[in-house]
Each structure stands twice: as structure tokens, then as C-alpha cells.
Length: 437
Image 1 (cartoon, rainbow, N blue to C red):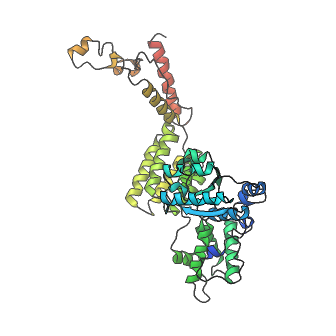
Image 2: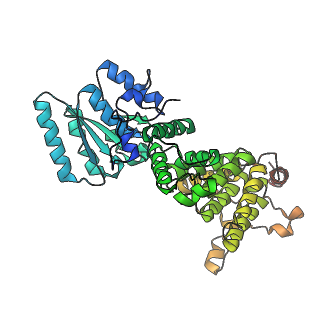
Image 3: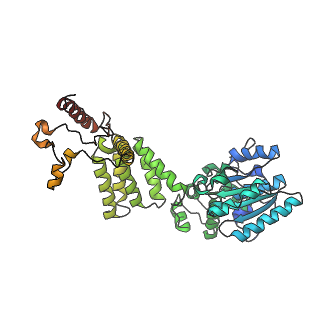
């Protein structure tokens, strides 16, 4: 696979420039890892061929080439390139940028305005881009690591195309390191295992892989070769790393939940281990396992909640790393348990009905009559104590009379819920008989 970055055309490395900067591509075709955008039939390549660019939002993790691609787009289309960061810019800065873009347009040149971390702008600031996008003053290219659906205004999104940047595949990171070695004129002082660990540490981030490579070169003595343990000692980093406030966190917990729901204990253990390795809070994982027990298993195996809760408490008692095994045990138990969302579905349906009919009074025969007035009004009249009835079942109705009977809980014929189904069917038969229906 081709490299992410092309080397600086100068054979002499510039002193002081970071390696990642020296390896930036010179043309859009040099960018790899994003072939769906920059390849021969990529979205951006087609835009350039058509001679027309529209406003866009680049969405993807750090180190995948968003800034570089924006700069190269401007160069290959003859647009003036203007870059700002939402972290360091305010309303006054935006006004200056917009005015400069208007002056350029008046002289016949359009501006490609690249806004890094665009999700950091508040709603009003995001809205300020709309006029310059609509009248063609500037082509907006925003970059974000956050899901645009949640972080950007609908009005802005309706005027811009969202393009997704993917994390680099290991092959791309490996090729990038090879290009860095050619530029530096020396090999990375790593054995094969350590090299694989460094690629894994980058976690799809091309810039991070080059930063790690620079750290390794700085640390190496004459003739020294690092193994995997030595590499970890140098860079003091666990792998892979993700920001727990961003998409990596939510993607992995979603994958873990779906693997458990899909009864795949091996995949569930894999995602659990990845989150442990990335430094996730184990008690957060414990809480999520408890949620899985009640949402996806419920009464199909009533022990699932007991075991998940016990595992959470065991971790709290043992700490790390010993307590992680308890969470792994619960994870496998949940993945291998019979699945049912009948309780989850029933509770949602009951909640909707309660909101729609929350003003209805319960039938008077099941209400207590603590005062003579309430007794005279019929409270408690006709109530039959179930324990005094045959089979400890009276078959009375308990819903408000105007609402009538409703069925929310419909257990499947599997796991422990098979037994619950038998009970419900038996009680339904008795209810019909005792109500004369």
C-alpha cells in the first residue's frame, strides 16, 4: 500500500521541523489511507475534475490528513487558502476572515476557508458562516473529530457535504514509517515485535506514528535495538489510545454491547480487553454490563443481573488488574445467556401508556378504605384477597376500568421465560374462567 505522506522534495531535512510536517504530501494523489476520497475515482478527485467544489465537513479521527487535504484542495483548484481554528478564534476573527474573503472575491478569486475543530464554535458562531457559504464568498471546509450530526447546526449541515476520513490501516502506518526511514537515512532501532507494537500504538493516526518514531530515534544509543518492553518503557504509552469523550469510546462500548447481545463471547471479550487496554474506567464497564443484563437478557436468566452486579462489586473490592477478571467473567456469562428484550419492551410500552393515560384512577375495589367516607364511596368494595382464593389467584382486573386490560410483557419461549410463559398462560386461562369469559 502507498504511503500517507510524500517526502519533502528537498534531499536535506530541515532542522527543527517535525517529521510529520516534513512528510506532508505535495499533491492530493500522494494522500493514502483515504482512497475513497483521494483515489482516482474518489469523491474529491471527481470534484476537482468537474471544476467545482462545494462546502464540506471533514469528519474523522486525528492524524488522518484532514488539514493536509484541505490545503491541497485549495492548491489544486487555485483557491486562496485561509485557515482558522475554532479553539483560538472568536467573533472578531471571523469578521476579519469574512471581510478578507469578500475582498478577494471582488478581485475575482474565491477563498477556501478551512476551519479546524469547527464543532468548538457555538451555535451562533456556526450560523455566521451561512451567509458567506450561500453567496459564494467562501467555500467552507470544516474539520471535526466529533459526530457532525450531534455537534453542528442543521442549517450548516444542510449546506455542506460530510466526508468521512478513516483511521489509517496498519499497512499504511507501516509504509509511512518506511518513508520516514528513507528520509532520515536510518532504520528505526526496533525489532520486529516492537515495530508491530509501535504501529498498534499509533491506532490509525499517521501523525502519532511519526511522533513515536522521533521519540524512539532520540532515545536510542549507538547500536541499541529496542524490544517491545523497551519501546513501552521509552514512550510510556499504552495502546491503543482513544479519547473517552469522543467517538472511539462510544464505538467500542457499542461494539461490546452488540457482541453480548449477539451471543458472541469471543468478540465480547475482545472489545472488553481493548477498552481495558485503552485505560477505560472499569466501573463504567461494570455499569454497562449491568445494563446489558437487564436490557438484553432480563428474565430469560434472572441470574444475569445478579452476576453482573456482583462482578461490578468485585472489581470495586479487588481493584485493577485482579478485578478485571470478574468483569470478564460477567461479560462471558451475559454473552452466553439466553436473550430476551421482553421486559425492556414491556417497560417502554407501559411507560408510553402511563404518559398517555396518567390521569386515570385505579379501580375502587383495589383501593384501601382507611376512612368511613372512603368506605361509603365504595373504596375496597368487592376486593378479593388472592391468598384466600383457589390457586392463590382471584382473576380480578387491576387496570383502570376505562383503560381496560393491556398486555405489555410477552415473554418468549426460551430460557427461564419459558416457565414464566407457562404461568402467564395458566393465569390467563383461570382469569377467563373466573370472569365467565
